[in-house]
Image (cartoon, rainbow, N blue to C red; front, side, top):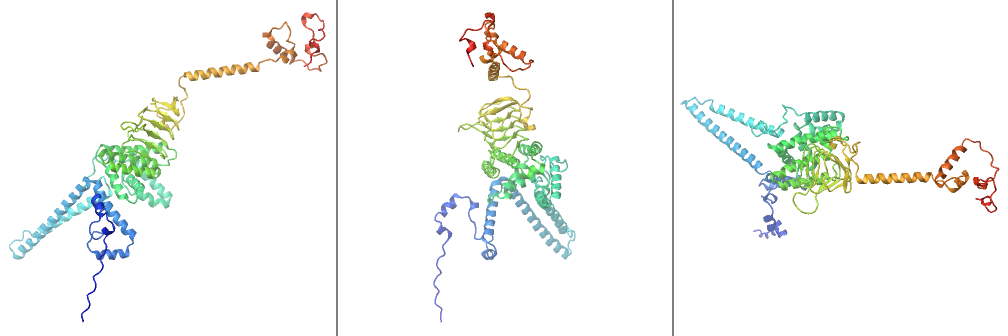
Length: 527
């Protein structure tokens, strides 16, 4: 008996049915953000996908999807360089396939001729060609391994001629860092693996810095491998900017080690100090900005601000040997310029005034020391060797080697050294500046007050004059003070006796010839 036909299964709702704006999404987003194909791993076998999904959770598959999409996004970011490298790889692969086909054809032809006895001259021909092909493949594999290990190696295995710090010539700064890292690993075994991954496993300072910055700035969407690729494209660049960045890195880390008393060593600065990290990340984003990759530079600026709490515009120009101590709250505007050997403490702002575009930020000269939480506003020039005291608000230009303080800041003297940023000395020079009108006025007021205090201390009361017998007609008013002083000096050496005579005002005056005073006179007055 025939089975009844089973009813057709209900239609399965697609993802597009649940999302009515799918067409709008597909039209407005790039291809690398859209799902292509039926399987997540690029394979058309859905059974394999189901088998893998049974052993993998959703988080791992989601992470894999994000990684694949990020890889495609990285290809678009890197641009022409990645495409050129892929083309070179495709050409090399095509050549290898052609060589394999030629070897196979030669082997078949040589075998037939040899078996027929017509010719035996090509007996070793296929073997020799195969050996040559193997040598080429081994050389290509060695070159690829060298590129993976050392980014300074080019495609053909030769080193970049513009990279200055080769292992043959030596890099003193990098050698110090490696030696210190070995000692730290021996003294603290718990950090031995950390020291190896961050320092000892790398061959150049640029590789170590790229690894450290990428791990600090990475997040769930901006992966570490992507950032390392971007950073290496700047740190090992074969141009003037690449040479400048490599030299600036060494000057910066030396400045941190020399000027920051809290810095223990070069390794301490490389691994732990966020001011140094933010500065070197800014150098990379500044190079990207100059190359025209402004969106990528702004992305790095946002990550630097989030992770390190410093806001450094990618267009700001910074010299070599700069120290950003602590770094929290430092803001440097778009058109700001900072010279060589400048020291910047926490909370410093180099900002503009108003909302007008154009050149609107300060220009800081060489060797300037900017104290903590100072603010410099506007397109003004701070001369070389100047010093800005902590908490100052600078609105006017500052001359060379002058110290300013206050809000608004005013000149208060000469800087103690010619380069305050190198000595980190925030005191005035012992020789003061020439006095101003305000200084002279202050001195005059102080002298007048001192004179009045002296007169008040030497003033004689009428009772003191009566006691000294100086209230007589023979003593003038101007001489009363001297009379009292003389009487006091004469009485200091005499023996003190009990007073039995009449009070001083009862004694007769000199012109009365001993006559007593009339009744009702001074003799009858009491104090």
